[in-house]
Length: 108
Ligand SMILES: [Zn+2]
Image 1 (cartoon, rainbow, N blue to C red):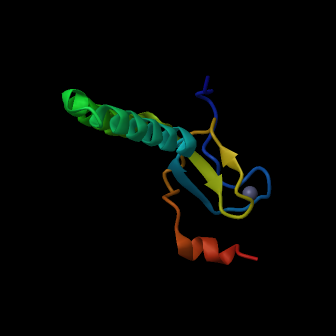
Image 2 (cartoon, rainbow, N blue to C red; image 1 turned 135 degrees about the horizontal axis):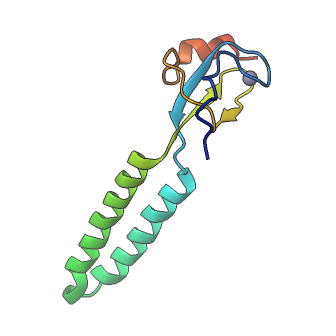
């Protein structure tokens, strides 16, 4: 449950860094798992001419599931310096996606 009274982060609560970016909180492992399972199911079904098309639909279905997943995953705020992730805060309108030029400032 998100708290509506919470303010967007101006600085990182962990290290005080003023540079934060926003990215999708996409579960990479789940995305990969869907692709791997769909590929395996396709290979099994495609080995039989009678179920070949079924296999093709499994691939299409997996792509759709991945796309839907991507649409519905929440966006999270991340600190450039300490890479802390903040899920329960509103997004700050000033924050954008990851920028390499900003990240370079914080490389050790
Ligand atoms: Zn930080």
